[in-house]
Image (tube, rainbow, N blue to C red; front, side, top):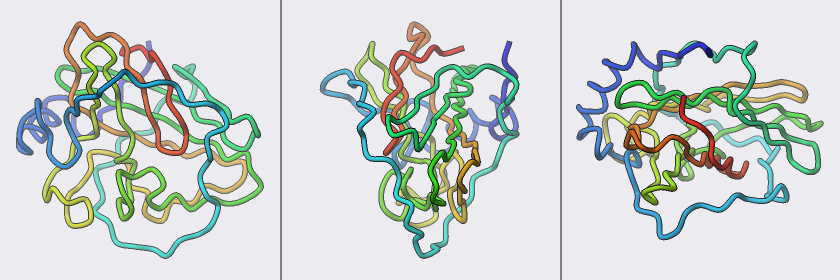
Length: 207
């Protein structure tokens, strides 16, 4: 059994934090659910990878950081780009009560350093992995990470996910990230995991 990660201080605290942002059913600022017109389709390995061009630093609110996922555990899913420059692993996707915690890692197999900045964010200026989403194929809904505080990601809203401020992934290095979501209904046992610039993992089981 994989090690369960406590994203803040456990499921109870997370549920309380999400409730304070408007409830589990509708987390503010990109959290919660978005109705999808059609189920997500898996992206091809020819998707453009992240840019290696450094960007100017910008301030960002930092969310609590949990312990890294157990590197000794087998990943749930792994995707490598066709050019061999990037590898993405879904390390854990755990349901605990009314929340789901995603742990994933990115390995830079390129020969250039990557400054992550807002490449994984919901929009430009979102220096977090707030653009990562879970897609419920049963109910055709998209779940984005929970967010506390201001609903504008360019202001003081804090994503319940990893910050990417001052995160550089050098050639050969692996960096781990996490994001916390409101859980889909109990009958949903697998979701699609969509990561900006990295494509979509389909039918990833919820454990």
